Image (cartoon, rainbow, N blue to C red; front, side):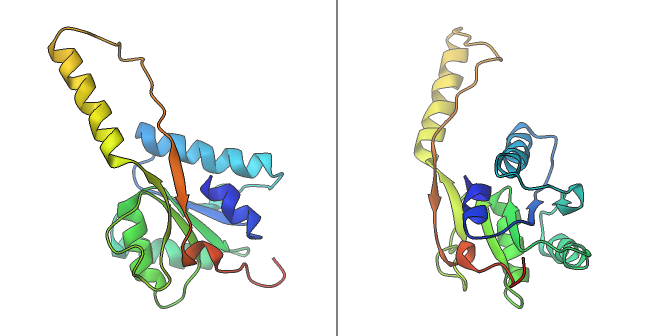
Length: 167
């Protein structure tokens, strides 16, 4: 959803910036980043992938490397709220289009305000609690059980930053 939205805004070089890629949630978000570009017929590039970005220093280093590429990204997909917060701080001086996964406090008050893919924390918590209580009661849904929760795009200013001319 995030990457497709950035593509709709004219971006063709969209970086994936995340934290620990082997976690199942990050793996699924990485697969979504790849799939959205494939479906749009955009040649994706592994040089647009930055992982282990969980603080401001790592975010700054990632942006320096990405912006130094011969074909730098024009937009970022941030795979989690922690990474988004670090990127938002670093991007204040030189903004770039971005959508993050997971809303975070003050995302709507930053300049530019940060667009996010939001999930319902109440629904997520209720589902997790129900699974815990089921396991405690001896009801095992199996470790293979997968539940997919709906998410929503919260469009704010950061996703509307244009791709540079000529992109």
